[in-house]
Length: 259
Image (cartoon, rainbow, N blue to C red; front, side, top):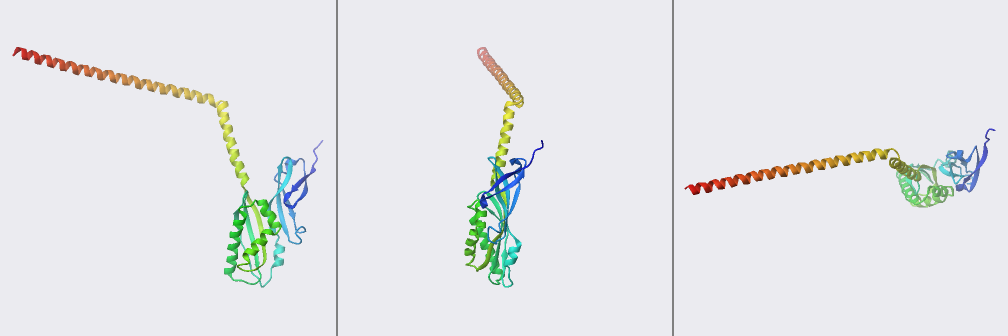
């Protein structure tokens, strides 16, 4: 009998909902993506979120990876007598590196200097605000419009805004992946060391160690023998010098007696 696909439930904690995906088994759902349009839930605010499925304890859980404010919603907010400012930068949070693209619309036409001030203030505030939060928390605050309200109040001191939104929020890299890579590398090194200790390599190492010990002992013996030979030669030279001195003293005594 050929295997049949069946529906598996996927939990989406960000929206407190669930979805169903077709697969032969739950492991096939790993790293698959789900795209949801949250326009109805947000009462006309057109946001599209891309989720990635992760398998944890034999359960499928969808984690957010990209949030996009759809272009037709932005076009609907644009007017003739306004100015807009947008930016794109990377920001670091507790567990990921994010790509953030804010979009700001002023109530009236403003100068380039004011637009630059709005961009810089928004960038600095967002980087400082995001660094102490998880990426799931950042996604939920944007969907709940909490982050935008705080940012709008901050930028109001420079110039009042008609619209303050995050056009795109994207997860560039997860910090957990880097930790997993490091642990995998460490485990790989441990496996190599264990193979070296319990496989064929330790015999070769022991043979090399024995050969090195024998060579060092032979070298030490050669050194000892050389030092002994040098001592004997020095003793012979001392004896010769002592004999020569004694012979010279005897000859001097004989010459004194003859005189």
